[in-house]
Length: 194
Image 1 (cartoon, rainbow, N blue to C red):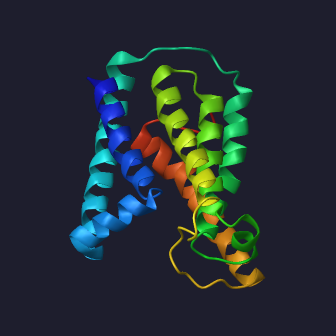
Image 2: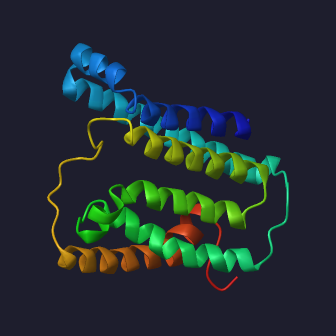
Protein backbone atom coordinates (compact mmCIF):
# COMPACT_ATOMS: atom_id res chain seq x y z
CA UNK A 1 0.00 0.00 0.00
CA UNK A 2 2.73 2.46 0.98
CA UNK A 3 4.90 1.73 -2.06
CA UNK A 4 1.91 2.05 -4.39
CA UNK A 5 0.91 5.42 -2.96
CA UNK A 6 4.51 6.66 -3.00
CA UNK A 7 4.98 5.69 -6.64
CA UNK A 8 1.58 7.06 -7.70
CA UNK A 9 2.35 10.34 -5.93
CA UNK A 10 5.76 10.58 -7.59
CA UNK A 11 4.24 9.82 -11.01
CA UNK A 12 1.69 12.61 -10.57
CA UNK A 13 4.07 15.18 -9.06
CA UNK A 14 7.03 14.54 -11.33
CA UNK A 15 4.74 13.88 -14.29
CA UNK A 16 3.29 17.39 -14.27
CA UNK A 17 6.80 18.76 -13.87
CA UNK A 18 7.98 16.76 -16.89
CA UNK A 19 4.93 18.01 -18.80
CA UNK A 20 6.21 21.58 -18.45
CA UNK A 21 9.39 20.59 -20.30
CA UNK A 22 7.30 19.46 -23.28
CA UNK A 23 6.65 23.01 -24.47
CA UNK A 24 4.42 22.09 -27.44
CA UNK A 25 2.18 19.91 -25.28
CA UNK A 26 2.11 22.58 -22.57
CA UNK A 27 1.19 25.24 -25.15
CA UNK A 28 -1.68 23.12 -26.50
CA UNK A 29 -3.01 22.56 -22.96
CA UNK A 30 -2.77 26.31 -22.21
CA UNK A 31 -4.63 27.02 -25.49
CA UNK A 32 -7.34 24.53 -24.49
CA UNK A 33 -7.65 25.38 -20.77
CA UNK A 34 -6.40 28.96 -20.69
CA UNK A 35 -3.36 30.04 -18.66
CA UNK A 36 -5.34 30.14 -15.41
CA UNK A 37 -7.03 26.80 -16.05
CA UNK A 38 -3.73 25.14 -16.91
CA UNK A 39 -2.08 26.50 -13.76
CA UNK A 40 -5.05 25.41 -11.63
CA UNK A 41 -5.01 21.84 -12.98
CA UNK A 42 -1.21 21.71 -12.73
CA UNK A 43 -1.32 22.89 -9.10
CA UNK A 44 -4.06 20.46 -8.09
CA UNK A 45 -2.26 17.50 -9.67
CA UNK A 46 1.07 18.53 -8.08
CA UNK A 47 -0.54 18.93 -4.63
CA UNK A 48 -2.30 15.57 -4.92
CA UNK A 49 1.03 14.04 -5.99
CA UNK A 50 2.85 15.47 -2.97
CA UNK A 51 0.08 14.35 -0.61
CA UNK A 52 0.04 10.80 -2.02
CA UNK A 53 3.84 10.52 -1.98
CA UNK A 54 4.01 11.82 1.60
CA UNK A 55 1.26 9.45 2.77
CA UNK A 56 2.81 6.55 0.87
CA UNK A 57 6.25 7.22 2.32
CA UNK A 58 4.78 7.47 5.80
CA UNK A 59 2.95 4.12 5.44
CA UNK A 60 6.08 2.56 3.93
CA UNK A 61 8.23 3.78 6.85
CA UNK A 62 5.74 2.40 9.39
CA UNK A 63 4.95 -0.98 7.81
CA UNK A 64 7.02 -1.86 4.74
CA UNK A 65 10.61 -0.76 5.45
CA UNK A 66 13.22 -2.50 3.26
CA UNK A 67 16.95 -1.93 3.87
CA UNK A 68 19.16 -2.09 0.79
CA UNK A 69 22.42 -0.83 2.31
CA UNK A 70 23.57 0.69 5.57
CA UNK A 71 25.12 4.13 5.12
CA UNK A 72 27.98 4.99 7.50
CA UNK A 73 26.99 7.47 10.22
CA UNK A 74 29.33 10.04 8.65
CA UNK A 75 26.91 10.28 5.72
CA UNK A 76 24.32 11.87 8.02
CA UNK A 77 26.82 14.60 8.88
CA UNK A 78 27.66 15.06 5.21
CA UNK A 79 23.95 15.32 4.39
CA UNK A 80 23.47 17.93 7.11
CA UNK A 81 26.37 19.92 5.66
CA UNK A 82 25.13 19.63 2.05
CA UNK A 83 21.66 20.78 2.98
CA UNK A 84 22.82 24.30 3.83
CA UNK A 85 23.94 25.16 0.29
CA UNK A 86 20.95 23.25 -1.11
CA UNK A 87 18.52 25.46 0.81
CA UNK A 88 20.44 28.63 -0.06
CA UNK A 89 20.33 27.69 -3.76
CA UNK A 90 16.56 27.21 -3.65
CA UNK A 91 16.13 30.59 -1.95
CA UNK A 92 18.49 32.19 -4.52
CA UNK A 93 16.14 31.12 -7.28
CA UNK A 94 13.58 33.58 -5.86
CA UNK A 95 15.87 36.26 -4.39
CA UNK A 96 17.96 36.62 -7.50
CA UNK A 97 21.45 38.00 -7.60
CA UNK A 98 24.85 36.81 -8.80
CA UNK A 99 24.16 33.25 -7.62
CA UNK A 100 21.19 33.12 -9.98
CA UNK A 101 23.15 34.66 -12.87
CA UNK A 102 26.08 32.27 -12.39
CA UNK A 103 24.05 29.07 -12.04
CA UNK A 104 21.09 30.05 -14.27
CA UNK A 105 18.92 27.48 -12.47
CA UNK A 106 19.80 27.45 -8.75
CA UNK A 107 16.47 25.80 -7.91
CA UNK A 108 17.41 22.69 -9.88
CA UNK A 109 20.93 22.75 -8.43
CA UNK A 110 19.46 22.93 -4.93
CA UNK A 111 16.98 20.12 -5.62
CA UNK A 112 19.73 17.91 -7.05
CA UNK A 113 21.93 18.58 -4.03
CA UNK A 114 19.00 17.87 -1.66
CA UNK A 115 18.17 14.58 -3.36
CA UNK A 116 21.82 13.45 -3.58
CA UNK A 117 22.43 14.34 0.08
CA UNK A 118 19.42 12.29 1.15
CA UNK A 119 20.48 9.35 -1.01
CA UNK A 120 23.84 9.35 0.77
CA UNK A 121 22.23 9.11 4.21
CA UNK A 122 19.36 6.72 3.48
CA UNK A 123 19.89 3.16 2.31
CA UNK A 124 16.30 1.93 2.35
CA UNK A 125 14.28 1.15 -0.77
CA UNK A 126 11.61 3.81 -0.25
CA UNK A 127 14.20 6.55 0.17
CA UNK A 128 16.10 5.37 -2.88
CA UNK A 129 12.88 5.48 -4.92
CA UNK A 130 11.84 8.88 -3.54
CA UNK A 131 15.13 10.74 -3.66
CA UNK A 132 16.42 8.90 -6.74
CA UNK A 133 13.28 9.84 -8.70
CA UNK A 134 13.54 13.49 -7.73
CA UNK A 135 17.25 13.54 -8.61
CA UNK A 136 16.56 11.92 -11.99
CA UNK A 137 13.82 14.45 -12.72
CA UNK A 138 16.05 17.41 -11.77
CA UNK A 139 18.85 16.14 -14.03
CA UNK A 140 16.35 15.60 -16.86
CA UNK A 141 14.83 19.06 -16.36
CA UNK A 142 18.24 20.77 -16.42
CA UNK A 143 19.14 18.95 -19.64
CA UNK A 144 15.78 19.88 -21.19
CA UNK A 145 16.43 23.55 -20.42
CA UNK A 146 19.49 23.45 -22.64
CA UNK A 147 17.25 22.58 -25.58
CA UNK A 148 14.49 25.09 -24.92
CA UNK A 149 14.18 28.64 -26.16
CA UNK A 150 12.70 29.92 -22.89
CA UNK A 151 14.34 29.88 -19.46
CA UNK A 152 11.50 28.06 -17.74
CA UNK A 153 11.84 30.44 -14.80
CA UNK A 154 9.24 32.97 -13.65
CA UNK A 155 10.09 36.59 -14.50
CA UNK A 156 11.62 37.79 -11.24
CA UNK A 157 13.99 40.81 -11.34
CA UNK A 158 17.68 40.05 -10.84
CA UNK A 159 19.62 42.19 -8.38
CA UNK A 160 23.24 42.29 -7.30
CA UNK A 161 25.32 40.97 -4.45
CA UNK A 162 22.88 42.44 -1.93
CA UNK A 163 20.30 39.93 -3.09
CA UNK A 164 22.86 37.16 -2.65
CA UNK A 165 23.47 38.23 0.94
CA UNK A 166 19.73 38.26 1.59
CA UNK A 167 19.37 34.83 -0.06
CA UNK A 168 22.14 33.43 2.14
CA UNK A 169 20.60 34.91 5.30
CA UNK A 170 17.11 33.64 4.45
CA UNK A 171 18.61 30.30 3.43
CA UNK A 172 20.40 29.93 6.77
CA UNK A 173 17.19 30.70 8.68
CA UNK A 174 15.21 28.25 6.51
CA UNK A 175 17.92 25.60 6.94
CA UNK A 176 17.79 25.95 10.74
CA UNK A 177 13.99 25.77 10.71
CA UNK A 178 14.10 22.63 8.54
CA UNK A 179 16.75 20.95 10.70
CA UNK A 180 15.43 21.82 14.14
CA UNK A 181 11.67 22.01 13.60
CA UNK A 182 10.32 20.67 10.30
CA UNK A 183 12.37 17.48 9.95
CA UNK A 184 11.88 16.14 13.49
CA UNK A 185 8.26 17.30 13.88
CA UNK A 186 6.84 16.68 10.40
CA UNK A 187 9.10 13.94 9.00
CA UNK A 188 9.60 12.32 12.40
CA UNK A 189 13.36 11.97 11.95
CA UNK A 190 15.67 14.17 14.04
CA UNK A 191 18.73 15.28 12.10
CA UNK A 192 20.67 17.22 14.73
CA UNK A 193 22.28 15.52 17.71
CA UNK A 194 21.78 12.00 16.36
